[in-house]
Image 1 (tube, rainbow, N blue to C red):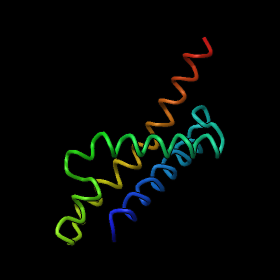
Image 2 (image 1 turned 90 degrees about the vertical axis):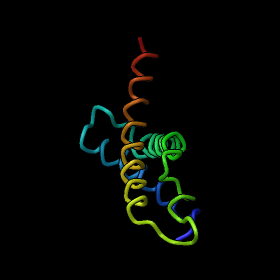
Image 3 (image 1 turned 30 degrees about the vertical axis):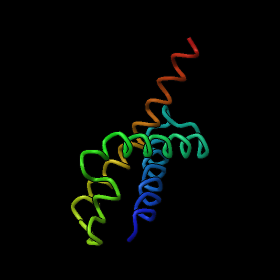
Image 4 (image 1 turned 135 degrees about the vertical axis):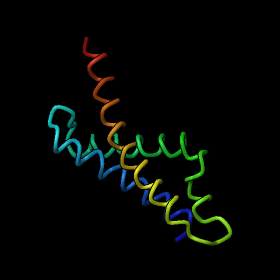
Length: 98
């Protein structure tokens, strides 16, 4: 698996996390398109912010060896990033409507 595929998979997990959270909690849902956008930006922001801790795609594929533990951490952070992106977007919307 290359770094590019890991990055794309991380974005996909962020989208899945945001859409799933929006389905479970209708209060936070912006529809499929809104949840997808929130999932993409939340996932990318989280991976870019916290990836420096050692679970970015380059660290996962260091020396052309696959590190499964770092990959699973990356997956979890991407999923949480999509969920938190959706929550932050809802908070911003509520603040702007006041």
